[in-house]
Length: 251
Length: 254
Image 1 (cartoon, each protein chain N blue to C red):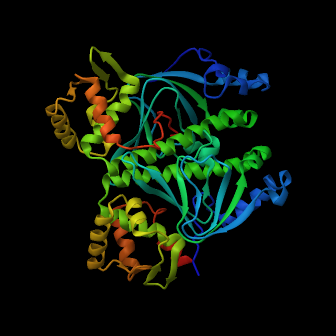
Image 2 (cartoon, rainbow over the protein chains, first blue to last red):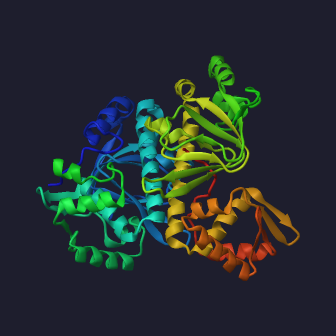
Image 3 (cartoon, helix red, strand yellow):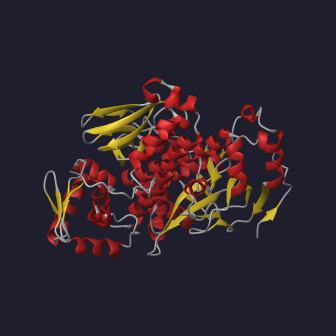
């Protein structure tokens, strides 16, 4: 059983999925059959959309994790973000030129709420659109912070920050001393999201294991001392909001 | 110190942020109120529109010049996360989130902006949804652009990042000179280094390397490519097989 953090930036006061559903039911249900939305389960590896596809739906992730990928200047397809429970997808293309610039792939089995763009446009609900805009603004904050981290922090420190973020939604077990994480990401995606090559990630993992800060298996990451991990994050100087270990413990 | 100009010098209905047709059918009061309460401000190079941590009390649309958005952390590190050019909007991110600004905005050149008080923007957005979508579109582009910059930092050598940045500047500040190209760089080298996430010393080494290749010559305020064709070949080589790039438009959300 995952312990879901309650601190999602788009909705700090409550369950983000419940809040989305309440808004959707009020905004789009009167305008279409089946409430104007469908909830669909996806297997790991499924694509919600690919770069270049026309935007046909907006999406809200209700469970699981979706990785956003983008082709870089050299043609490599790299993870640029991952979206978890309560996160939204597709609004950028909806408000832009109607074509997705990113690809969205389920990195775990997922449950996703889909809203057709026609329903969205017909509903014309400012509150609903405001939720998508708010999510996009939060994403810009996170992306700028990541850009600063990529430019100024060591790769090891960036990996620790990524683990802290993963702990928000993918802590499978914890007590007062130990956290067990089940990262929803492949090692290649983790490397891209922490701003390094897969080779650097392997070296980084060895270094962190030698320090005793975390132990990595194929499916899990064990943090044996939450206080030591938290102290390292504090030393790196990341803002408290980024460190979600407290949230996982509270859950 | 910023100076106000004629507040009606730029007509909201034709400023281009949203299609002119989107103003049709809007209450006349909307245009009148916007025209009366927005102000056109001139700022000198080096002046700030706002500081990181400051309250968001206005939105801005850049009418001319270049504004830099700089983000710092508690350790004293700072990075220019965006170069904002004519046509862009600034401040909408903090406005939407109802948060303090997460970046500082300072003028890299003399700048003219349209200053829209936040309370006026809130009222105007309720009257005209297209207007808010115009700002939201800029926010989306800004997000795309920031992602691209991260990918560039990760994928490219320092030399290549410098060349790509100069190529982006050439779109607006480049002038053909014979077979060559002159780029009037709107920002200082220290600012360029900060945009690329590199130290000034690294920037200096990189400039020497590029000059030794005969690709570009740098002086205090401009960069000259003796052969525009060679410069564009170098950029094409860096871009390789890129197929899904998002154009950098200078849009910024603040």
